[in-house]
Length: 107
Image 1 (cartoon, rainbow, N blue to C red):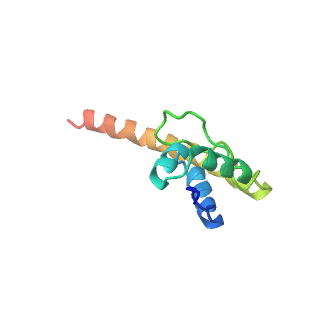
Image 2 (image 1 turned 30 degrees about the horizontal axis):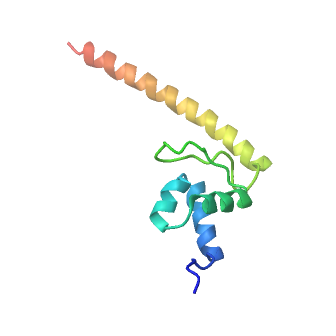
Image 3 (image 1 turned 30 degrees about the vertical axis):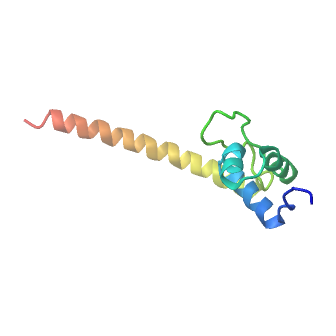
């Protein structure tokens, strides 16, 4: 009788692809779930999920959005959120400087 593993279910493959898209490395997943790293890489390639190929990093970031390019509304929202983040960071820096100034001049 041949000694081979049965084919992985589509649900298992999809779960591996989602984990890679979330930042886990294929090598970590291969060790954890007992499948081969090239299988996971192949499933990711088929699903269009790209990841950093550096095997030394503990977590790997996906290089592209698994759903494809951003829509117009998503791109507008991203631009607005980046502007808001910049403003909030500036406000935080101003408040930190003001706090330090008042702490030093509280005689």
